[in-house]
Image (cartoon, rainbow, N blue to C red; front, side):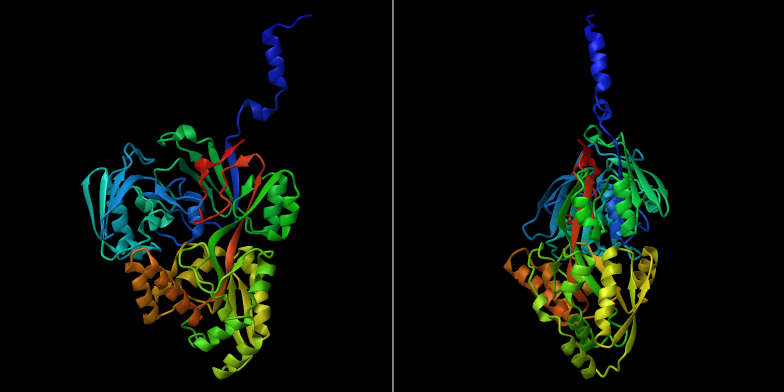
Length: 492
């Protein structure tokens, strides 16, 4: 008996897998740390940017996965010959998610807020360096700088430079409103944050995901279990590196190993005795074996560093040879500084696996030179409040993922409490010298000053290990900044 074409087509359609009927439009991403809020212009945690940057909020410029700066809310710009005046032309037809139109007045409002006396923007100095903001028409913004800043276009592409809508700005920490492709939907504290596609986005038709849920999973074993069970589609920054081989051999997943800007360090409270003595800080540097920490905390992945800078960045100089692993030298420095051992200190460790696992190795190595580092595991909110905000710590282990952030050491109130006029003078040269050999030389001098002063124990560059289901594409394999560009992610 012959079947009609209609019946044949219906039978063939019924036999197709479900995925062929409709492309998948939801995504569950795993992340290790929960952000303290969702406004990147007021909070310091990189986890904020992982959720909102490029998704809810956008800046004038965008930093791509390869580190290149391209237009975003500004479709073009011109720089004056003295490199102190930047004229931006805004992209026309852009709206905020509350219906307000983007204009030059919003840029002026945002940058003045970022520079205000009560601003908590971690890049406040960038905006405080703006002498004037002119708005000759709704789509033109003219920034005139007090001092040259060769990194300005890069800075404006970081999450600290996103543009806010004045009427909603005060509530952005809990109800963020931006110009991006996704809207905030819900936040279950301690568990998940959900975003949904915004139909009013200027290029909404190019966005294939309708819903994205960020699942917060601190525990490495739980991260693995969530992937294996299919509860999580991808971990852009996977923490359970001990399980890497298992996932690499699983045909359901794609595993990629890239790099970040994460300077992983043992941070030292430079004002606390005895760490106000450079000899004691240098003793710590000699006492810690970078290779052992990388092996134990990062599964052997990671590039050793000798200062607060990565090989990805212009002007990098390898200073790892300044403090080779030498426990005998460390003991001699402690003796020279008049330190009686055993010396009792605390080592506060936040949740990331590299910190919890690496901290165990650090404590064991310090014990060998007579320093008993009592480990205190703290939750992320406790670390941000106790260590970062109130500087209540001796030692901690953390990875600073912000790119090219040498300038944090020029702030004596930063949680390291490093106060060096010599370093500030060097950074003044870095900030006021145009791009070229002279500026690179100043950047090198800044790295050397930090190493000579042993401000912190500089360990290694945090690797980026991403694990995703085979059918998922668009996840960043490298992170010049900590962001998840969800508009570029789609299912095959």
